[in-house]
Amino acid sequence: MRLTKLGHSCVRLQKDDRTLVIDPGAFSAAAEALVGADAVLITHEHPDHFQPDALRKAMAEDALLEVWTSRVVAESLADLGSRVHQVGHGDAVTAAGFDVHVYGEDHEILHPDIPPIPNTGFLVDGEVFHPGDALTVPEARVPTLCLPGNAPWMKVPEMYTYVREVAPERAFVIHDGLLNDFGLGIMETHVGNAAKEAGKDFRRLKPGESVDLSGAA
Image (cartoon, rainbow, N blue to C red):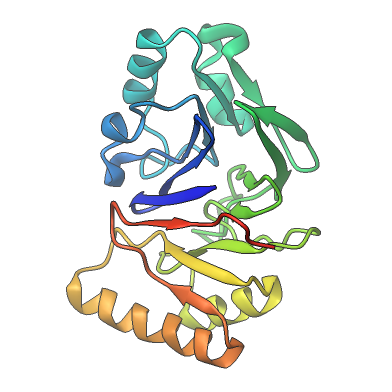
């Protein structure tokens, strides 16, 4: 499997001749990210993860493209019929040849008086876990973690705690689109410190950068 960071929280996973795209949102040039996708996973409805117009256009151009997503997103795309699949915590599905297990129910808290929206994290082929906007710890082992690097709902100590709890072999930063160069430098320092503590490969991929996960345990 090959993982490519497409910007902010969007990643592309490729295996054999199949392509799975997760969270093509406003900060990741969603239209371009969806080119060549065989299936799309969307964790929740926030615009930095979900661009409905871009997704609808891609689905109009490719009659075989399907989506697996949270309840709110699925409801907003209900007119597309059976090509849109609502999933929730505990579900296991096959999307374009990828085995996907769903973990997590709620977005992290953004306002003390407002209940969280639904958020679905995806573990793909037992290898890559994308948590969306949540610090969900799957029950299953996670070899490769898409690690939130910065968010209005997360403090730096929570990033350290999260990567310790998940204990992946490797972690690649997502959710970094709100940072300027100064902020990215600080965030990368903390991710590097977490990597040194764990003795693992934790780092930020630049948009467009890929890593080969073939043979990973």
